[in-house]
Length: 270
Image 1: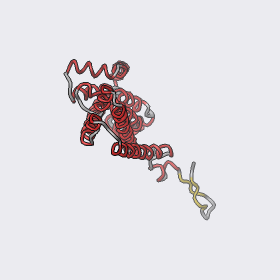
Image 2 (image 1 turned 90 degrees about the vertical axis):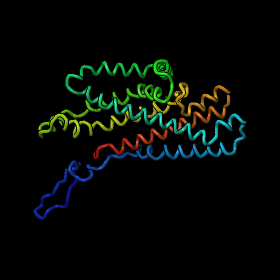
Image 3 (image 1 turned 180 degrees about the vertical axis):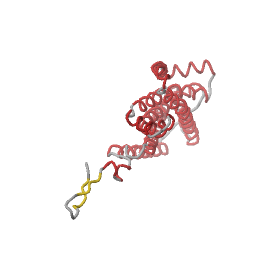
Image 4 (image 1 turned 60 degrees about the horizontal axis):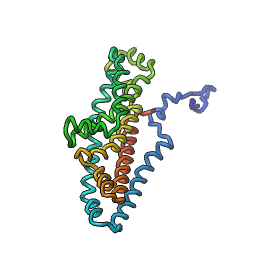
């Protein structure tokens, strides 16, 4: 809707187009987005505070006390974060360039095949994928990283393709009409407009990887899954709940960080 300025002495009015006004350069932040940025960290802090209180006051036997030492939890939590972050970096480094390539020229024909392979990779049970790579590469940190990367690649790849294909063709043609090369059109028109969709895929992949990293303990790659595994093996309810709660808190926190990153990278006016 256009803004109307005061009437001139000659009876005419100046009209300002909203598209050219300063408001159009600001990021669009809805009430839902504000809630999603505020509620998760508050919830994580509240639940973690309750866990700390319980841990300090609970009457634990020797096995539980040994497994729930703060130094042990800190070490396992850091391993869990490392697994998640390294796998997510590899996913983005592979999926985004691959997604861009599959929207260019003759490579578009290969897009359904690659998406199908990625779909098959994610449809496979995560435990099965980890075990298969364990049989092939042996256990350890990097085997878990490759399994998690394969499992998390689909959302980023799919959203990169969908985001670029969803850009209005007239904007791309306008860029070329201004003399932009294909690379400049990609960098200055297509990718900025596709960023919200791509970042949504990155956020989904982060949550998937953070949750699946709890299975890395089965191939000696560490992480908070060890607390969960010990609780199940020894039938210690406190360990099972602790492992599940801490993994859920890390997943929530990582999802929140992804949302902040999505907002920070979103072009102004969108």
